[in-house]
Image (cartoon, rainbow over all chains, first blue to last red; front, side, top):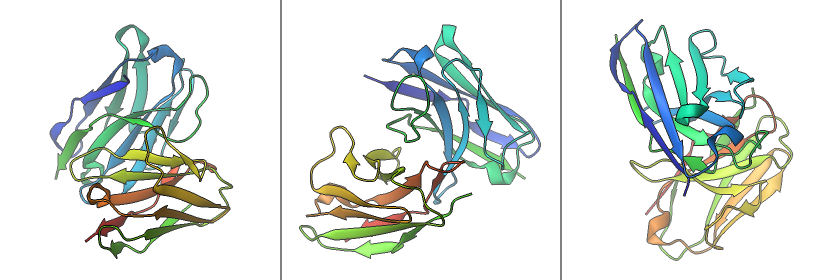
Length: 122
Length: 106
């Protein structure tokens, strides 16, 4: 079955960097668009970034553009989120999600990891 | 970006009762719309996509309707496991956006 396992979260000081990883299994990793979605404590969901199945297209929320970078390594079945210049507003649980169908993104998120918590201290 | 507004913020119901949740989009999203449920400490789970299509494994007591800017999620007879937070999402306009959630409790 489809599994997504995030790692790399932790406590980091404001202004520092962190890299999150998401390992996928149970599906042909190279065929699917992958996303990061975050949730601040007690709050709603915010889409953060997306990388196309072949890594050629990357998209970001305005709130993270220029600070975060998404990438993927097909040889490791892993997607990454490099987060720079972190601020307290980035404190959240970060979820990795997979699209419904191979190829282009359909837009909804049927598969989620358990998430990894990032706490940015000021 | 398209703002998604859910109502009510909290819905208090009893097991076996019917629950109706609402979501309004700030601009039309056609039927490019989804519902999710999230229990404490868990990841969100997809319930409905394309406004009215149940995701794999979702019980028939969950139904979605609507198009354009007004959407409804109905739970026909609440079970104990349905007490949770429900989120709506649009994926018609860029970027995809979520509502702030409706908590269904006893």
